[in-house]
Structure formats: C-alpha cells, structure tokens
Length: 117
Image (cartoon, rainbow, N blue to C red; front, side, top):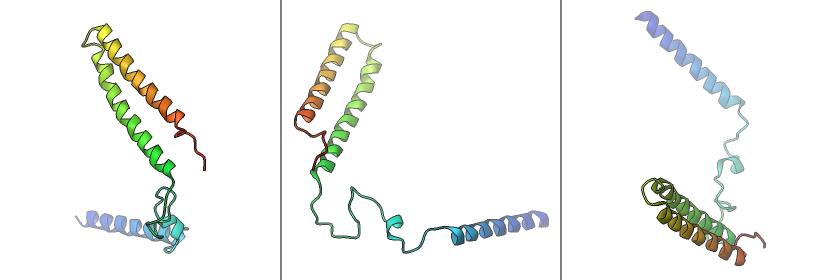
C-alpha cells in the first residue's frame, strides 16, 4: 500500500513538472490577441458588432445549408433502390437531380458562385 502511494505521488509530481515546463516553454503569451481570439467570418470580435459584412458570406452559408440538406435527402433515395420498382426509383431520382441541377444553374446565373468585390 505504501509503495502504491509513493508511485501515485511520483506520477503526480512528474506530470505537474511536465505541465509546468510546457507552460514555461510555450510561445503563447497571455495577451496575444491574434492567437486567443476566435475567427468569425473575417471580423475582429473585439470591435463593434454593427459593421456591414459581405453578402457573399451569407450566400455561401445558405448554399452550403441547401446542399447539406439535399445530401441528407439523397441517402434515402439510395436505400429505396431495393425497396421500390426500378422505374419509380429512377423517375424520383431523376426529378430530384433535375431540381439540384436547376438550383446550381440558377446560382451560377445569378453570379452567386463567383467571388468578386
């Protein structure tokens, strides 16, 4: 029991010494503003929150959400391949992918996918 206690104390001492050495040798400073602040869409989080932002950030976010939901809708189509008739599955899949392609064409036509100032 005494040996186990000594081993535990030794382990705690070694781990504390290693943490202390890593804190001393690390290159991070407590007041380093760039390293400790989060990055949110190109904004400085310590400045005013009422500044205008680029509409492209919003559009890219909406496009990502739309295609993320569409990918979540594609998985059941793959699963339904074995459950329903092939022609019904093909018609449903074709209709869904046509809607996807029309959405991409519309976004491309509206210049939402180009990043210009």
